[in-house]
Length: 135
Image (cartoon, rainbow, N blue to C red; front, side, top):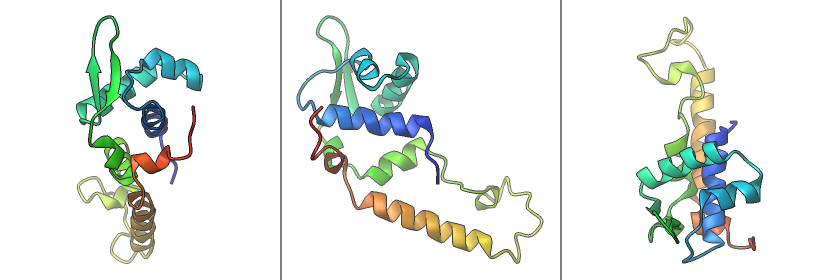
């Protein structure tokens, strides 16, 4: 499974924020640190704020902070929020146009693999991602 840049950046934001506990951090600061697009990072930060994992404050001294519960959020929850869950079109009956769906053995295999992927991610929290990091 390949993650989108949106998910990659969401996880990077949370790792960065975890390594700066209690501090307000700007998207510009993180974009410069990671060497990535400020505009894209800002969109991802907005999505994380909308989901309740970050809080924002404007003005002088403003920035982003982790919401209190974010450190204990499972990584799988973040990835489920930022990614489409469908590895293949047949996972969604309303958009499935595959003519071999009835007898296909690939769909259950891929579904099992995806479940295993999320089981691994769900075994770790955002706090775990940054446990050894010193940015």
